[in-house]
Image (cartoon, rainbow, N blue to C red; front, side, top):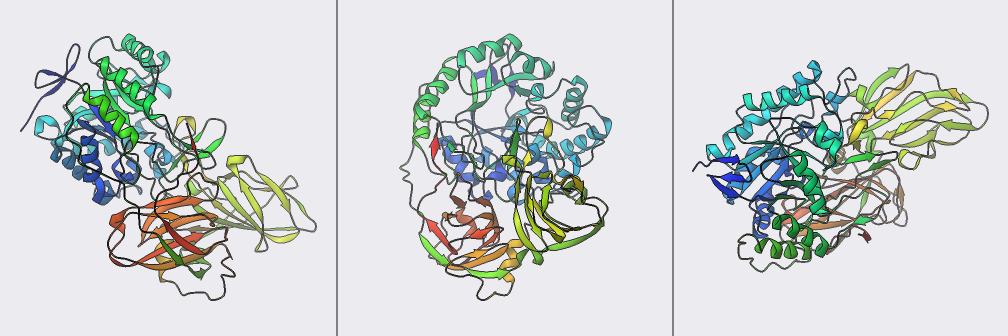
Length: 586
């Protein structure tokens, strides 16, 4: 059955009647696709009538020309499930999305081209963006509400007023979107700050805001810039994200519920960011840099009403009570969080795991950046002859983390996030740096910055001359490679082993189950269960467990694999009953 959704003089109009959107954000690539319906249904039980999602371009097209829209990026299926559950959908295709997502959603093959002016009317950039939007809108268009689907709103760009004011750029996105068959109302979002709301403005777009408090003040500012139509908080921040090395963020659920009540009582529509955060699986986590580079943790729980593993929280129940004051809510069946199976699995070792997926890229006069080496390269080994007759001081600009060796003997680490860019170097003949990208910036001017070894390192102020031997490591392929490789005897001594090393273990489950993989006793690396890439772990915290979605497990035999880049003091895989995301801070 088709309906009409419009923007009226004072309200959103659903088939001519005033309609208050009560939505929640949920990003389909951050949730295992077999769990989409469960999470969407739980959001409906909280009282929501819509689900909002970003579309991450780099998830759909990680390599130029290789477009994907199946599996965990099956946007069509996600939108169809929303419709099946009797809810509406809001889609935000970007092309830039922020979202604490790798590179703000822009593909690295795009941002590697330094001739492009990102997020502008640059014709070369627009050509790529238009091709992308046409593909996404081909999925969205038949699923709009006036075609019998779930989609009621489509957003153009994202927080553009915080970045630029290129009206020609926004105009091109609007024109492309309409030409691609999108007929529902188009929106934009910015923080309710005058220069942002002005900079991103476009007459074809309905302004919405992103904020998490001071409700009356922010709605008033938004109303000054959007004189007619409904007020909407497109991102009601009810939690926050975590960086590696910081505390786990939470918000007081009573305060968030009170703010939600103020929004709804004012007649505003709302999109709760996030109703369910999910997980930065694989290598999808972003980073921030407002003077200091800070990479995102693997968990994107966000202190959401529905936790990373799908449990209902006190915040869920508080929000549901608030929503019930303003709109009917469904009955809530009993849902008690269940403890996950607890297991202890001894590891066996695989030597030199990086050799299993390394590719020799040849000799370079100067160190090649990761961007120059290909799409989504995150781990590169650089080697040069650098003989010195005495010890010296090594200085290097690395993005973002490097292990330094001299004649194959480990010397130390360089770490961008703490400004550690030099170390004492012993005499020797060769200099080796293994450089890891720990997350691409997703906000502001450093989106698309080059990664890897930036320029030639210096020893006592003198540049290390080439040639540089460069090898790239295929990180996603490491899980299967380690699972299939020969065992190395006697590497693990008293539960301890130095990296890089592959570790694997087998365990048995009676049935599929969510698991929480304990990372205590490990250093820094990557983890897989049954070939599913869980993401990064890091002793820096805050999180101490990785979420394993039940659909990646199986009744019977299972396999856990990690690739440790530093050192393990407990060569055991332990699965805990509950998650540990770190010490909480409000």
